[in-house]
Amino acid sequence: MNIFVRNIDFKVSDEQLKNLFSELGEVQSAKIIKDRATGRSKGYGFVEMTNDNEAQAAISKLNGHDLNGRRIEVSVARDREEGNSRGYGHGRDRRD
Image (cartoon, rainbow, N blue to C red; front, side, top):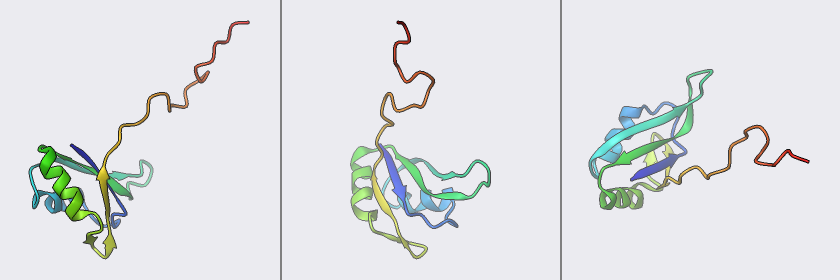
């Protein structure tokens, strides 16, 4: 299950995030999203856990948890919605 984590302190590393969730189950990956231009944390990230039950328990236990002085918000990650891209034409038929 993919978990969304927000309000992460900018100094927290991928490894720290992984270690926090590893206390509650097997973590497949943990990634803090960084600004492409600066390389600085954007304050949110994703954790992928192998077992859905462990992931749900982690969400319940860690939502509101204090991590480096900030209360993180933890929830199930939602897939990006289809058709939410900003591509050319926006799906309209250009024929007259």
